[in-house]
Image 1 (cartoon, rainbow, N blue to C red):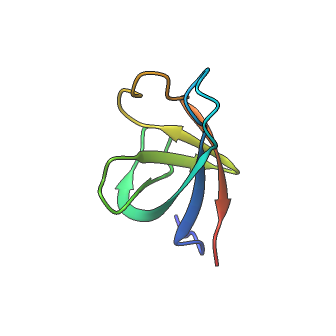
Image 2 (image 1 turned 60 degrees about the vertical axis):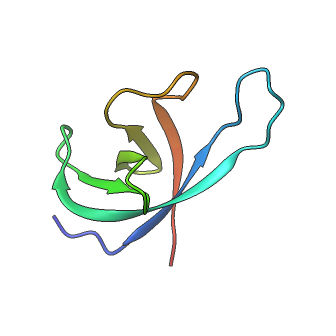
Length: 77
């Protein structure tokens, strides 16, 4: 599978009820294939691992408390 985008911006919503602004995390492609057959993307620290389909980033592994399992992803140049 070839993907021309090598980076995505993934929007992480603020804590529920915390009125915190969303945080944008940049993820990079890895050579790993996820359970849905797409590439796995991760942040520099490896804390966030997602599989991206269209503009939806599905969190892989156990989401942290309050973390949404599906997030918005935008390709970066």
